[in-house]
Image (cartoon, rainbow over all chains, first blue to last red; front, top):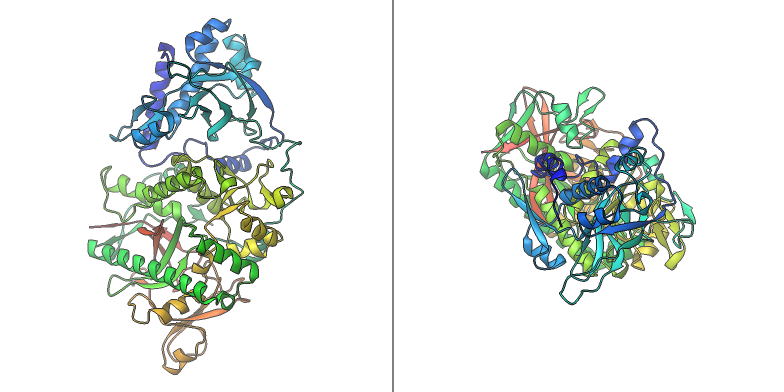
Length: 239
Length: 400
């Protein structure tokens, strides 16, 4: 993956905060924990609940920043999207041992990350990044406006494991995307240029179609609320 | 073992809240109390570690014996619960965590009071909040706290992910996200579940939260539970007692779905037996000479006949509810709590005194964590009463 100057300051600032957290545990502070997200939604001004019917979006996939720039009108859009994807890339918990990471993603496909207290961990290399086709050929400014309005959940990294399975990392953790790419003659794998994915109903990423339920979901509940009665009669449960 | 006073960190509330502990104060009284800490010797820590290991082993042996003897119905379980316990035990379903509570004052052997094997809390306090208190107070490099709970939990979750990916948790569990659930809204339970979630994420698992009362049921595949988005729940960490799940309306459907391998729960069903205080009677029968086990019986007669103090506890009670303490030779309790468990079977346990600090009048209860089958650290709760209940206060510790 090509690195780029415009992402460096962003990345450095992000790493500092990440290292502080990494020392003991990650998660709650990062605001990516779904239970805590629900708590804060409860305490604050009324936030609409996650929509029950997730949407399918077509995603544009770029292997490199240059590939994006060649395709898009505004280079700055590509840089912003790349920086967003890179943020998730840096946030992944990853693996404590390089062998574990390479066992999943293949030899030479993992890089190390270090934290302030001297520990390090390993994350897969970004095979590329993706952004919604709805943002295609937008200017950076228009893209940012859409992001601020919460209309789009932004750009995310794309990974390919040893089996060719494509995944991403976002607010819901590592998610398989339901695409498998075959190795080419030189051993590298060609990413699809477009992928149809489901947007996470919480607005924090994407997943394979069928991950989240929709009205045609075969698992549509026929009833709900059959657990919880005991807590009403017994009081607090756990201790 | 010594109780010491110390100044709380400035802005400690913000510090512990940043770690996810939102329930540090109840009605203006701190539940997390860092104005106090306990100091142990390394030998005392070894003693607690050994006691925990021994009691965990004896508890597992007792579960194995009860299942082998086919006497589960004597423990209050119906046909569904018995099948679930047996299946989970015979399939060797690995558990995640539990907490054994001990009476220990630094002298003699710790005495096991009970095993919270199904829905233990005070986990975030023990694993994270008291650790940060240590490193804030004693310096970044400080490690002299009996607390490897976080590392052990991450390791256990990594093993769970490997098992899941290899299909060892079941075919429909392969690649499934881990759902976590509890009563919601509820700061303490949600915070505990959020900590479990973050541990699972650190181990590389994908996690979704579903409030317990928003779980739905679909007839698909002979009965599948779904979350609030109608996503099938294949792996469920529930901070909600097994006996409650089975008593709720979905109980029979849950039993059927588990037996069909449509869903797998953590803790596994056999853990409900660990939380059942009737197990303490069986453990004592099997290991009458263990220095860690208190005489525990189904009747108070033996204690009364020999003028010994004893405690009456409901088999499935929680948070110190419906507990009565009887002094030697007395027929009415010297201390008792009310609660929602008066309908339970009761056990009668030889009285063991908790650590008592005379100047403050505080009692201290030792909670010793078992993660993935191994002792991994302690958390201490203080109370103004001999019966530790939900008004107790969590206090940090270190050893020298």
